[in-house]
Image (cartoon, rainbow, N blue to C red; front, side, top):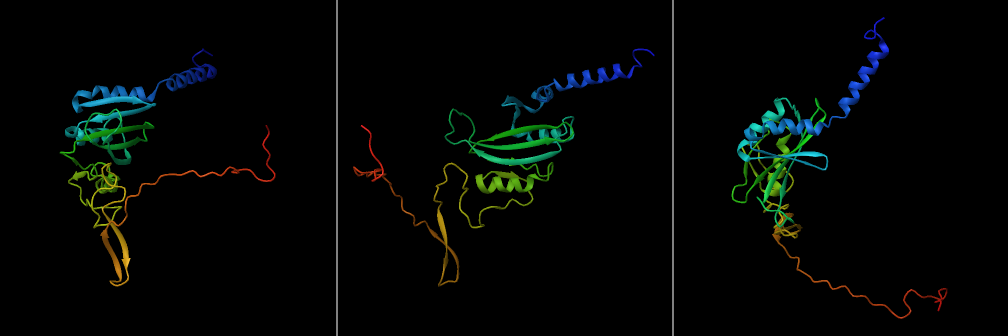
Length: 223
C-alpha cells in the first residue's frame, strides 16, 4: 500500500487543511472583497471590534446593496435597519443622520454592517425593500422616529407613534416631554390631544441629618 492510499495519511492531510482554514480570518476575506470594489461603489471599509463596517455613498446605495445580495458575498438576509442621529455626538464631524443596515450571509456565515450618511438638508434615501423585503417595516420605523424619507417605499406611514403625532421622537432635538399630551375627556367621551401642561422644575437635593443619625440604643461609637 502506498503512502497516498494510507487512510491515516489522508486523515492527517484533511486535519491539516481544516486547521489552515480555521486560521484564516473570515473578516479579512470579506474586507479584501470589499476593497476590490471600493472605487466602483465609493466605499470606506473599516474593521472595528472584530466587525466589518462599510460606509457607502448615497448614490451607490442601491447598486451596492444589490451586489451584496446577489453577488459573491451572498448576504441573503437583512437582519436590521435603523436610523442614527449624530447631533452633538462626541468627536464627530460629518452629516447628522445615518441609515445603518445589519446583514447576514448564511452561505459564508458572515455578518456586515453598512452605513449611509445623510445631511439635514437632504434626508431622502431610496428604499431597499425591493432587495430585502424585511426592510419594509424597519424603514417605516426609521421614518417615524427620525424623519428619514425612503423614496419609492410602497407604504411609508408611521408605525410606532400615533397618526396625529407631531415630530420625530428619536431626534436629539426632540423635547423629552414632547409637544402635546393625550388624555381621556369625560365630556367628549374620547381621547383628546392638548398642549403640554408639565412645568419645568428645578429639584435641589437636600441632605438633612440629625446628630443621632444612624445611631440607636444598640450602636456604640468606639473612640
